[in-house]
Length: 169
Length: 174
Image (tube, rainbow over all chains, first blue to last red; front, side, top):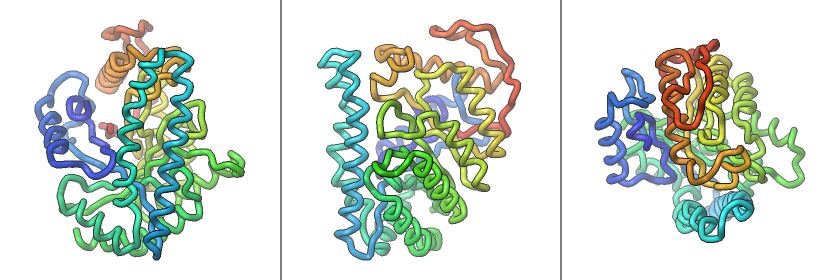
């Protein structure tokens, strides 16, 4: 959909080569179609969303990220509980598909976005070096992550991680 | 690789024990902090009727954020197109692009929670068709400077001029 209509693509988590290529090919293939939102100087662009929790202690960072994403998913389920007011049971169940996919990948998301400053620098550096994205969108704060934890993570990201990633570019 | 950029994606979830005025002020302070640290974007989700999203009318919050930031780009991620009248969407976009002096990034989506469609008088089975329909109205509007339902299957309204034009020649869509 994003490629067809000339949009940038925001992808949940690290994007794989095949998905990236399909998006870019579709973006170019439909250039000039009606109902495009791109301009004359637009190019395909991919951003990725990542939960982020940084702590000097890796296990603490993992706990923060897990609590954050668990809280996000609990709240997302709260929205869907009202689906039963308007849809039959089988359609309610089908509508939970996207949420189930996120839940299935929650450990991968936590392990990718939680760690020490050095670990995050290495992992994010690897994502950027792959060349499929140049825009990492951080989910901070998220769910039951406290604002203080989010600020601590932001402080370290800005002082240690961000400069290192920019210098490596 | 090119210089990487970084953004923030937020739902503005409720925090038990934190009064909502404080919650929203804290988030504005956080965005200001991100702006001053050189973050490229702030993207706000849209959900309704739950503690998942305490600023469901994104434009109101983004309008406030526009006044405490200087460089960071702002916008919904995503605006649930089937839920909203296209004239309202387009007028809100144009005002925000002016309030931010051309810093609007606009994410669009269909919405994955069926109940949210019914809460806005829409419906779930038609949501994909309504998404495409509204997107088409938006594309035509930004190309012509007026909002028309001429090619719409779901709307029928007299053509209305876009009195407030966007600052950006091309608003980035996600």
